[in-house]
Amino acid sequence: ALLILPYVSLVEEKVRELAEFAEHFSFGLERYAGSRGRFPPRKRRNKRAVYVATIEKANSLFNSLYEEGRCSEVGLVVVDELHMIGDGYRGAILETCLTKFLTLKSGPRIIGMTATLNNHQEIAGFLKCSMEHVGGPRPVTLAEHVKMGDIIYSVDKTKGELVSVRQSTPLSSPVNSNTFDKDCVAALVQEVLPERVLVFCPTKNSCETTARMLTNTLPGTGDEMKHKRTILVDRIRAETGHMDTAFSDMLSVGVSYHHSGLTGDERVLVEEAFTTGVLSVLCCTSTLAAGVNLPASRVIIRSVKIGTSILTRTRYLQMVGRAGRTGLSSTGDSFLLGTVSEKKLLCELVFGKIEDVRSCLDQESLALTLLHLIGSG
Image 1 (tube, rainbow, N blue to C red):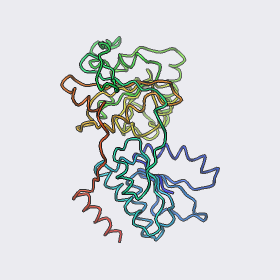
Image 2: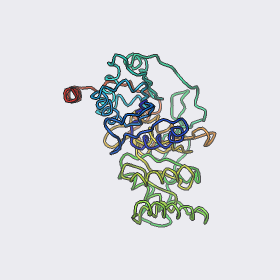
Image 3: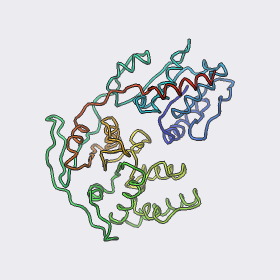
Image 4: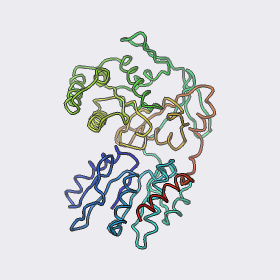
C-alpha cells in the first residue's frame, strides 16, 4: 500500500502513528520523505508493506517500481489532502503520479481524502471512482471572527454579515518598551491562556518576529510550568547540540515558532510540547494547517497573504479547522486579521465558496512530465 501525504512533517507523524500497527500485524513500514527512501524498495518475502511518502517521493517510487516491473505489488493508494492536486507544480506531480497508476491494466484501488473540495464529482470522475461523504456537522462549535482595524466582528453565517462585537486593545510589554502589539495578537492570545493557540503567519520570518513579540509581551507562569519548559530547552539543546538565546527565551515562556527552518528533532520536540500543554503558543506557517495534528482552542490568522500570494478560502478553512478539535474542548474560535481596505477579501474568505480544484498540468509542467516519462522508458 502507498500512503501519499503533502509534507515531510506529515509523513514523519504518520510513520510514528503506524509503527505500533506495523509491529503488531507484521507488515513493513517505509518512509519516503526528504533524504529517506530506497528506490526501488526492497522485495519482501510476504509482500506486505506500507510506503508512506510525500508527493514527489511517491512519483519517484512509482517510476522505480515500473522500471522493475513491480507495479502490481501496490494494491492500494491512499491520497490525503486530495485538493493538493490543484496546488501548482506539486499538484501537477500528484496528478501525474495518479494518472500513471490509473493507466495500469490491473491498477491499485485509489482512495482520495479531503475536507475542502468543491468539484468533488469532477475529481471522482478523473479517478474513476465513486464519491462518498463521511461525517456530519462539525462536532465542536467554531466561532469565527474578523478583526478590521481595531474592531472585532463576529461572523454571522446565517445572515452573511459581520457583526461588530468589541474594540481590541493592544498589550504593552512589561519587558521591552519598544515591543508593540500593533495587531493585538498578544491580547488575543492572553485571553485564552493557558489554553493552546496557533498563530498563522505569512512567512517564516514573520513567525519568528511574532514569537519574539509574544515572548516580550506575555506574562510569566508558575514554577511548575517553568520547570517543564526548562526540561524542554535542555532536551532540544541535547538533541541538536546548540540553541540560540532567542529561541531558548521563547520556549521558557511557552512560545515557539514552527516552520521548515526547524530541524527534525526540534520539530518533534516542539510538537510534543505543544500537544502536552508545555508550550501554549505556536507561531506557524500555513503548511501546519494541512499537516500535523496540533489542535488548539484559538486560531489567529495574522494576514490575508501567504508569502506573496493571497489566502484562499480552502486554506482559510484548513487553518480555522484547527480550532476546538474533538477531545480538546467543546468550543473553539478563530480570528482573521486585516485592514479596513481589505474588507472585501476578508468577507470572501469567511463567506465565500470553496474554490474548484483545477489541473495544474500546464505547458511547462506537462513538458517536464513527458521528459520524465521518456527518461524512465
